[in-house]
Length: 117
Image (cartoon, rainbow, N blue to C red; front, side):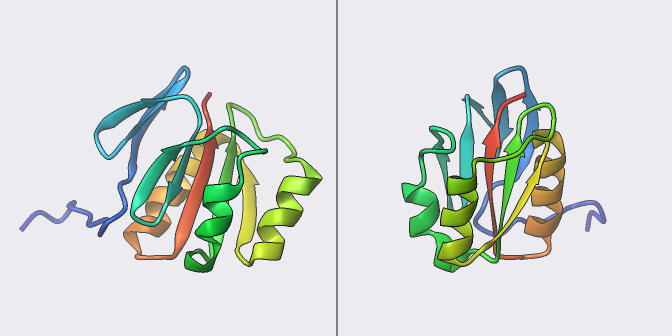
């Protein structure tokens, strides 16, 4: 048995990121991404709420990665997510990726909306 092995159930972890891309579950994906329980989708940014709102009942918290640095999210985006139920945590994308992976390994009900660095 490997002591460093982590199980992520059905949702893939963020394996890495770089200029304009994320590596999620071993697959390179260009541009912004939204990670929801059991699915990963290209994300059109703060105006692209449909998939996130449809999954809101499955989430306790949504992490928003704002790119290389932390930034404010639009008030309309924050209000829409919070009105749908999950908490919203805004941070730089590298921090959001690490936090997402830790809580995912604990089996938590989380999602992430990530803008690339």
